[in-house]
Image (tube, rainbow, N blue to C red; front, side, top):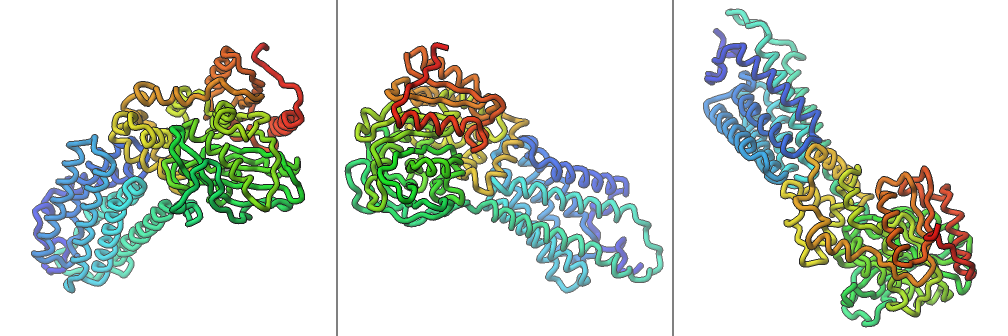
Amino acid sequence: MSTNSPRAAPRDLVWRLPRPWRLAIGVLAVAVGMVVLTRPATSLGLLALLIGAAMLVAGALELMEHRDDGDDRRTRTLRRVVAGFWAAGGVFVLSWPALTVRAVALVVGVALIASGIRGVIVASRARAQLDARVAQLAFGLAGVVLGVLALLWPDITLLVVAVVFGARLGGAGALLVWGTLRPAPAAEPQPRAGPWRRWSRTVAAVLVLVLTVGAAGLSYTLRQPSAVVDEFYAAPRTVPEEPGALIRSEPFTREVPEGASAWRILYTTTHGDGSPAVASGLVVVPDGVTQAPVIAWTHGTTGFARHCAPSLLAEPFESGALFLLPEILAQGWALVATDYIGLGTEGPHPYLIGQDSARAALDAVRAARGLESASFGQQTAVWGHSQGGGAALWVGAVAAEYAPDVPLSGVAALAPASNLPGFLDTLSSMLGGSIFASFVAAAYTSVYEDVRWDDYIRPGSSPFVRSASERCLSDPGTAVSVLNELAQSRDPQVYSTDPTTGAFGQRLVENIPPATLSVPLLLAQGESDTIIAPAAQSSYVDGLCAAGQQVDYRTYPGLGHVDLVEPASALAPELLSWTQDRLDGGPVTDTCGE
C-alpha cells in the first residue's frame, strides 16, 4: 500500500478506533462547538462548563487531526503532549466551575498558544505538502493570536474567544466527520486529489485566521477609551488653598453653539470631609450679554473613570443629558457645568456622593467668576439630571452654609438619583443596571474605608464589574459590559451581600439628599422612567413633604429617563418658565398639600 495513503500513516492508537467512535467524537465536536459559538453570553458557570467540555473534545481532535500532514515521530509526540494539555485543562475547568473569568481565560489562553505553536512547528517541517503546511500554519497562528488575546484582555476577549474557539472546534469536528464518512481508498494507488479537494482545508484554515485577526482587531477597538485625559487636567505643584479658585482656563469650541463663547476651567474645591481637591468644568456665555444669570449644571452619569469627564468627550453637553444649551443661551443665561471631582482630574470620582458633588458645583460657579473675558451676575439657578439631579438637591441643601457668596434662586432636580437604596434595588432588574452598579461600587469602596469590595461583590462577577467601572458610557467596550450583563442574567447575583445593608447601606442612606433646601425646588419625574423608578421617587418626595420641605413635584406620563430632558419634552418649556420665575422672584408652587 502506498505510504501516501491516508489510511497508512501515522500509527496513532486513536486512529485505530472504530469508525462509529470517530464519527461520534466528530459529531460531539460539532455540537459543543456550535453551542459555545451561539451561546457565549451565558452565565459564567455554564460557559466554564461548556469550555471545559470543549477543551476535552479539542484534546481528542489534536490526536485525530489529518494524517496527511507529513507527521513524523517527533511531531506526533508533540501532538500527544498538546492533546494532553487540552485534556488536563478541560478537566481542571470542569472540576472547578466556579473559577473566575480570568482563571478560565488563563487556562484557555495557554492551551490555545500551546496548540498554535504545535501547528506552526508542524508547518515548518518540509515533509508535508504545501497545502497541509499552509493550513497548519494558519490554524497555528490563529491559536496563538486567540491565546494571547485571552491572556491580555480576559474581560472583553472571553466572549470573543468563545465565539472563535467554538467555530474552530465545530469546523475541526466537521472535518473529522467528513474524513470518517468519505469512502475508503482502494488498495491500489488512486489519482492525486484535485486542487479544490486538496486546498479546501487550507481555505478553511485561512478563513479561521482571518476571523481570528478580526476578533483581535475588535478586541483592540473595544479596549480604546472614548477620550484621553490631557495635561490641562493635571494639578499644578502649587494649588490655591481656598476653594473656588480658578487655576487655569482655555477657550473651548467643541459643540458650542454660534453666538456663544466657552472655556474649560480647572479650579479648586473640597471633598465632603474638607480635604482639598481639584475639579474641572465648562463655562459657556452668550456673546454680548453682561451680568448674565448662571445656570449651574450638574450632569447625569457619564462614568466613573477619569476619562469620562464631559469636557473631554465628543459630546460634552449631551453626554451628560444637557440638551437645552441653545435655549439657555437664548434666554441670555450663562452655563457653568462642573465635571465633578475625579472626572478629568485625579480621582476617585465620588459617584452619588452628595457633599463632594455639591461642593464641586458651587466652586465651579465661584471659579467661573475669575474668567476675565466673561461677565456673570449674582443670580444662580441649579439644574441637574439623574446623578446630577441628586447633586443638585445636595447643592440646595448645603449652599447657604458652604457657599453663601453663591446665592441660589432655585433648584431643578430632573429625574434625580435621590432614593439611593431604591435606585440600587432598581438596577438589579434593569438592562444595563450592572454598569451603573459598578460605578456605585467603585466609588463607595474607593471613598469609604468601611465599604470593602470583597465584602459585597461576588468573586465570579468581580472582573466584569471592575472592568465595567473603568469604562465610560460612551466607550466602545461598554457594549461588552452589556453582553456580560446578559450573560449574568442567567446567574443574576452580582452582589454577594445586599449593598443596601451593612456599611454600604449606611453610606447610601447618608448620601440621600436631605430635606434642608432653603430655596424653591422643582422636582420632575418621567412616569415611564426605567432607571429612576417613579415609585421610589414618589417615596422620596413624600419624605420631603413630611419634613416640611417645599416641593413643586411634576410627573410626565409617557416620558422615560432621557426623554424627560430632551427639547421635545413637555418639561422643557416649563423648566425655562420656572427658572425665569425664580430669577424674577415670582410666586412658588408647593404640591405637598395637594
